[in-house]
View 1 (cartoon, rainbow, N blue to C red):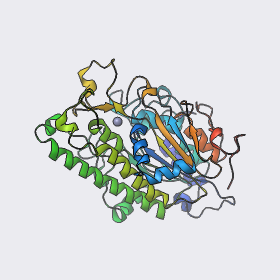
View 2 (view 1 turned 30 degrees about the horizontal axis):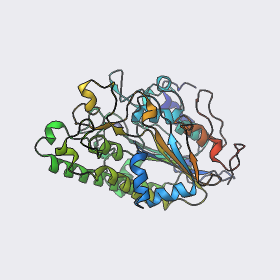
View 3 (view 1 turned 135 degrees about the vertical axis):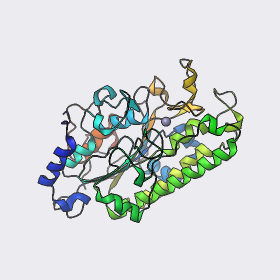
View 4 (view 1 turned 180 degrees about the vertical axis):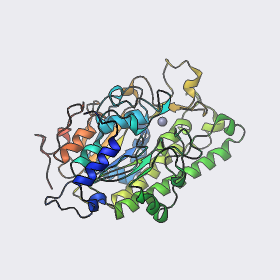
Length: 412
Ligand SMILES: [Zn+2]
């Protein structure tokens, strides 16, 4: 289904007519049958090559626990994967050329939700009276009305982040659209969580780094720690005070760090000891940090809750012969000396990852062979709620991850 030209207005009307206002935050639900609770945690550019040794060293106990209790494996992504391109595919289960968000910049304009030409999962769930909560999910700016709340993530525009690309405006400094739905939630968040940064810190430019490498790297990593601590607090507050049937939270500092601080060897393209020998622990530490965020989220998870951890792509050191363009060694804004990337023409070079646990999900199953793709998340989640995938969706229900392999899911 194509989204009408004024989806926000129409959907807001539908909400007013069909959903009691008290249901906006998931309270006052009057349905007789309890609905499954699903939490999706998005990690931008989670790289299994880096995670596996950390798990073996016991440094990611929370993720290790999910692997033990559930199903995991590589997640096939799209070609030339980047965050908005893949997230919009996860939202809609359609190809980038179909949903319209083909990259960071589309037709000269920073990607935004008004460009989405296919219906996203938050809209389908909301129409089916499922309560929805989303926070820091990339490519959700400006936010759209849902049967719950939405706080935008990567690509939010604001002060010091006018183009919205890979930078971090504070919640009070957002410009050019709303970052919070419903609007009243914004003041509540500032009061109870603080004036947090949306998205991760902008990477320093080559000029900023020159002759000040150690100081700039340390300062940048400190800011990343601050942002992660704020996000942890935000998620904890939302899960405590605004529980929803379906919740989608996301992290993006891991990928950002990997682009320029991936621990590479001197023979890798772009190696510069002045930068790359300073903090070889910086990138692995992001995942140890993520595991801490995961632990905080898992406090809100009982054995009836489904948890999906999904990465839109991996990230690898520069490696392609096709990249003769000197800008290929720079970041999206072509200023940071990057040493790793993910928008390789062949997306199979940088698969994402997929972890699932919950009632009826197989324990100890490892998915191999790239048979699970970013198209499959939305149909699988809809299936948990008894909603058939929309006609335009290209993915399938991942029936192989469920104990009863006829594809029917254990009902609560
Ligand atoms: Zn990236």
